[in-house]
Image 1 (tube, rainbow, N blue to C red):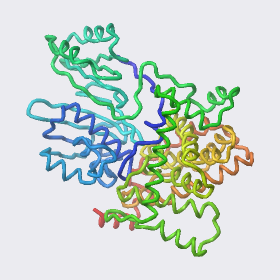
Image 2 (cartoon, helix red, strand yellow; image 1 turned 90 degrees about the vertical axis):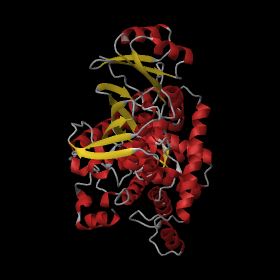
Image 3 (cartoon, helix red, strand yellow; image 1 turned 180 degrees about the vertical axis):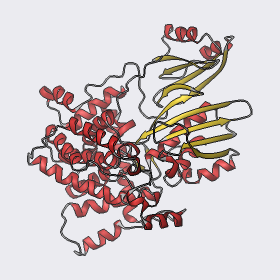
Image 4 (tube, rainbow, N blue to C red; image 1 turned 30 degrees about the vertical axis):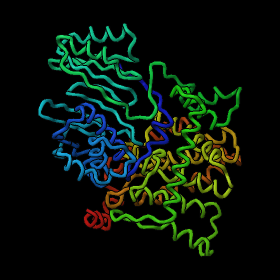
Length: 521
């Protein structure tokens, strides 16, 4: 049996990203990535797809309203997560001649975000089971009945053979052509999975296809921006380890994040910084778009950020100080998300506004540069790495504490960084922020990622601002960040599924919510 390898999270894979459209990263972006892998598996020739969701999972009630269908169809068509055409993917897939059927019944899923796809054309049929892990991250867990682990962070070559898979595995390993070569045995056939930094050379593929027992060879492109490798190492993976690493050098937390990602992705620190600056430019553009007004028919909330700014400028609001600047910026980003504009999942689409909105608002007030905002985003990302490694960003698994709580902790660290606080103060602020939001449920009204999501993003930003100031004043966090993250994970496991983005509890089942859901449908 092939032992599953722990892959350290990456800032640009797991924490800040993807660049996307749609209401939910767990649904839209993740589904699109699953669809892209399915498309490669079928060599872009799909005639029919059966999509099965477990009746007890999250997707049974949310697959249409939160964008899973849209994302999956887009992926099957080869679209990117930020393509403007994504909104019309259901029409486009019909026009492309691909027949689809969605069934909801018991499929024995062990994860609430499970996709079971049966893909067919006139020559072949493949079945694939995949899960959405939160924030757009995915894993293919089964291929044609064989347990497998594919996360979209390698160039993957899949070889189907009647037998002799061990010989192929040994030959690839001996020639040192791959980072990892795995062998799986199925019912009457074997799969050799080759994980590498590039696809095999044409001459090597030709040799493999000439072998007597080889049935087929598939090439699966990576769907993540940062690849993994056999030499992937990280300098630390917990807050405690980071503090030990930093004991002598005493880097600010943004610099630690920059170094971490350079080691994780085998890229230079300069490349890491430039990638974050590009993200900063995207979020600034999106927020400006939101502030000028967004219009989209299929949503609950309309344009509200402009009204807030107008009342603030007229001195018709209570004196909220920095909060009165942050609120419209956070709202603007949420309004862009809900109008299918471009956003950054940071760490998720449902919580996409807390960190970017707060950072851009603070930058405006303090006249900070894009470099300053990038440093704040990197500081936040370090907290996100610890959460990604030891808990979850998926509301379907951990409730809204996993999204809003994580976003608030990341934002608190970013704000401490802006004020040139110490690394210890940044992690203390993050710890307090999560402590204040433990147990937060996810109960989307009318099955949409708008209400109470907007309010929770604003609350998360408010909490972050308070925790940053508390930490800068040397308030005692009491519980270390690592222990708080572990607690958040355990609390999430204790929450009933009805309160974890299934639209089966909380505000989701109020009379008003149900009436609104019918009207929007």
